[in-house]
Image (cartoon, rainbow, N blue to C red; front, side, top):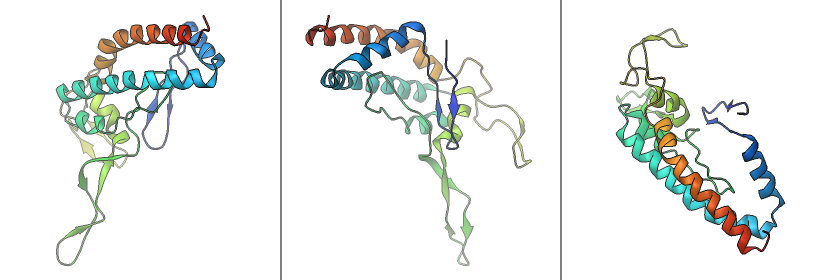
Length: 180
């Protein structure tokens, strides 16, 4: 069972999957003493960093050039679970827009927020009309792909490996704490 995915105004997207076993795991983590939870956080952080590294490698191989830019926004918050956040308000890429001064220089230019590029970099693009009524074609270079170009591929390839490692780590922490 997956809980509702939420999208904020910054273009950051969080998906939380909570099957029955994961709910039991979260209950177990909540029942651990605070110092043991800190040990879990310390040991889960390198796993999150490795998942981030895999995402960055898959972004480098993606046919959408924006994938590399979005991968720059990846963060690994310290958590008891393996976690990588992508997108958000971080400005990435080249600057655009702005105002032209009398001498011809541009000021007040901004780069796009990573969240605005997130799903285009993953799924590719198709022709259409944007909210401002402008026609566009192939904004993300690669054609639309419902299987994804880099996030889904990285998750499908790496998460089973790191999940097994995570289970072993949790069992070790519980055993070391004498809570088994």
